[in-house]
Image (cartoon, rainbow, N blue to C red):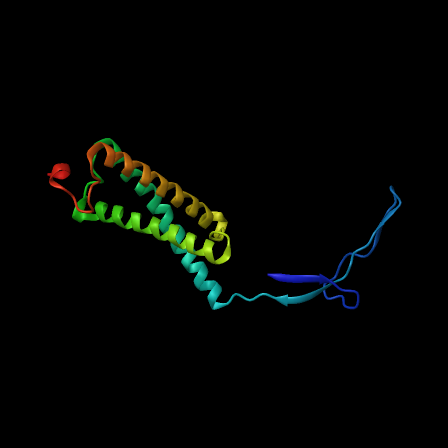
Length: 164
């Protein structure tokens, strides 16, 4: 990032010379600028962008998995099947934890800074944050409906009634 300010005594970057617009009789002039500083990326910045990228990747995978899980729960009364070696069930559980982690990080940041997470690269972290809040709302609604209809919500382990 390059920080610039108008300067009357120093011309560090070149500008086109003053030009006249013969048609309108006006003169354009440029104000000389002076370079104040060059921003450097610190290790703190790079670790924060790494964390942001991990959160983006996790959120982009976790939110659709939760949507699939909630749809399956609503239509069948059971969560996702365990899958080969329990991989789908594990992905489902980790997805719930990832979304809760993103929402927790967002709430923590909100209390410390007064605003949520930064937008991140291409605005993806902000999008993941919003999707995570929507997923949390969907979790509360679907789990609430499941509890009212069935009297309980499925536990974290596969049950015999669902996959027996």
